[in-house]
Image (cartoon, rainbow, N blue to C red; front, side, top):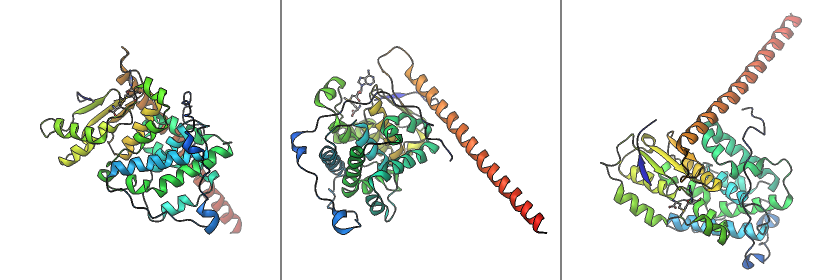
Length: 345
Ligand SMILES: C[S@@+](CC[C@H](N)C(=O)[O-])C[C@H]1O[C@@H](n2cnc3c(N)ncnc32)[C@H](O)[C@@H]1O
């Protein structure tokens, strides 16, 4: 990480750009071949979020969620699909606020209702941060498939239950961004889903939170962290260093929104996870996440800025069209009312 100088709904199903190629699926490990556990729903009809003893340490909690999601994924799907699917499911659910009763409501959704829920979550955030949600396209592109396979739906259902029952919303669904930023759930999930050789050639080994926390505590003090400064991470992974810096700024009584954040990764799934995390951790309006080769001579920061500006412009265009449709409908309703009043008189 290095410091950078200061610079600066009516929507159709195909409003987002299509994603690039999907990642190689990791083969199911041998331990995952055992049959999935019997569904509690079948026995009782309605299910409620399981009461579990959440590990006190938020990083352990995040790892537990990732472990249970990996078990659920391989037991129900066997890695037959892209790893975008479990990552996008957990990423989407992490963007929910933990409202009373929400966990139970999500647990009682049918498998075929889940892609719709995830689309709505991503779409809701697209309205606010189209640049980050576009960057995370690999995480939600699959949910827009109008004809998803039954096996994939079953796996998404199992992943959703595993994540919710292990207390995902209790980790990421707080109103207070400080509490939402206590751990990075997507980091152990992304590295756990990657095939060993895939991980090796990508160099995808994320720095442990205890190390990033220590780095942030040593490097970031009140003299260094002047509001207006920007932080730059050229190989961001899921953004775990930014999480530690954001928490350190909060510890110093500073607001993450007063800083610039620029993270880049050559891998679109990593960049997507960093983009979702940037929303969960509330890094603020001056956070940009790019997807490019940091070693290439071209100006990837400028490219990311242009892509973000285009995303906002496209959002405004769609929202403008949506507002016009609503206004036209209201006007037509009014004309109908006046006409029927006039003919009644
Ligand atoms: C070792 S991980 C580090 C992630 C994060 N910085 C951390 O400390 O947890 C390396 C990351 O760098 C990315 N990467 C490797 N070569 C890159 C390049 N030339 N440009 C941008 N990112 C790159 C990989 O995709 C991977 O996500």
